[in-house]
Length: 325
Image (cartoon, rainbow, N blue to C red; front, side, top):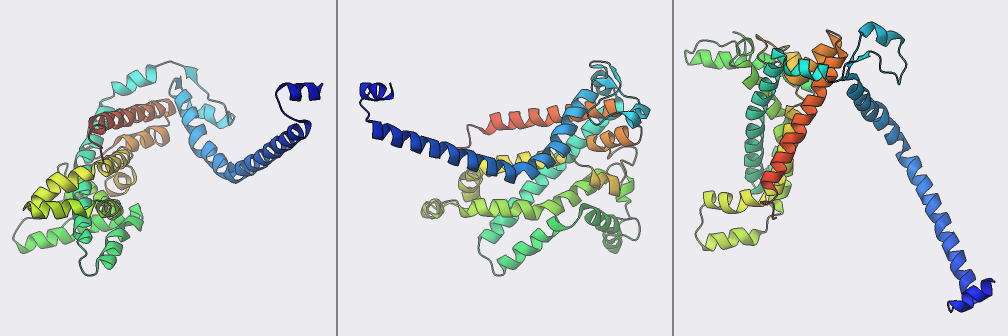
């Protein structure tokens, strides 16, 4: 029967056996490599499932429930206790004045932090790209703050911008300016936090911009020199447009961090003064672990997630036609 089929399609018996042997060998090799690949990624899959996927699913379900914290003591690992209340948590959160204020504070922080970090990063990168003497050492110096812990950096800035004994106030006193309680005044507390956060991350994004600058064709600058372009013209018409893709990536990364600002606020101000520095992540922490309102905290988390996704999509749509390089 096999010979008839093979002869019908013009394949000899030996060729058919060779083809089947090769096919069986490929299948066995594919199964072996596939199995070994899963073994290698299994530890990462377990960690991601335990600490990212499972908490995300649990919090999504919890956002639609009214959870009594006492019920959590006897609940199982995969059980979400509480009464199903549909979208009541989301309605309550959107009507919460403190949540709206924390969302405004978070956007205010981003409005200071993102432009400041992008401007400082690209400026330093452009200076280092000129090949100045000691640029390798300077790159390391600018990158060092990024590896410093947030708590340590926050404590350092608390000392610098402290009361009458702070370094900044000591400098102001030399010019006869009255001391300012930066972290105790609503007008100054958030800018100081944004300044510290920017200082920590400038070195990291400086390296990203420096790599992007080195990939811009030098022939463009040579042609602009022939046309008599100034440094400002080169930056406006060559450098900045060529950094379009990197700008979008940096903006999205900075935006994600801005909407997750927590440790700096927790250490430096604790949300004060007068709730002027309380951000959405800090409010979520208080709702979940101070007031034990898990449902409300979960609803806030997913509202924040929706805001981040919305801003990212809008940013992408605005810039997608400009990213030609």
